[in-house]
Image (tube, rainbow, N blue to C red; front, side):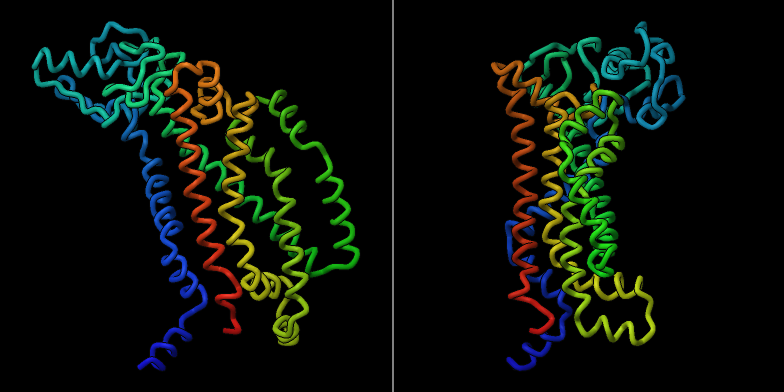
Length: 353
């Protein structure tokens, strides 16, 4: 019986065995599940945390402001400038009891509304209305925190994926072809890596109004170097092995050999490095936003929230909220990274075992 179990274990694919190993590392596994669930929910924040109504029934007509966008207050006979005030509109409909109604999101506050909206006050402490209080302009801290989470994770993931693509192509070509191609690119990479990139980023951000995708482009100019060196070493090590010579002797192209044969055998350092690259991406965005060279206000940002909180240090909730969110998010990602590193340990699971 034990021989049958052992045989079935050996017949499992290496990736499946590594996944089973990762699932036994509870901290990393549950952190991955939690982070994926929260990140998935964050894409539906306009339906969950928003001051725009989901549905409005007014005089037998239906409106969907959260999908259609701006709807003037005059549409609902409100004496307010600009867009309708849906929280106030709901109270009016309930008071009049004329068959009209408003369906609001579960948390009816936007990360962008300030003291110009009805009922908003500056420096309100946490309460049943504002779960994490309001900031120096009357904006809801909890709403900004949730939207900033989605922006931070999306930024870090996109940045890491783009850096991986550039690093795999350039580093793989350097390691596989070697020779003058490798020497030329090594010198270029060394020159580029010695530039004061932090100052370059600050200068570019001060000249050009930074946006989400522009910041990704600026940071990509810097972050692809580390992955390039890593992939160069992996491809240089793998190209001398027998399976590469066998593939070339069978007439396969060098491009196919690089990305069909060598790359799958170089996935371990790529996968184990990924969570920590995401941590670096989040930290980079928070740092730039804190210094004032990141995303333009009023975009929700942990760094900007932390900067405002430190300027109002006595309002404890304004510091506690962004620090706690960053700490818990980075802690989960580090736990995932530890689990991945253990699961992909070549001493435990390798193709020779």
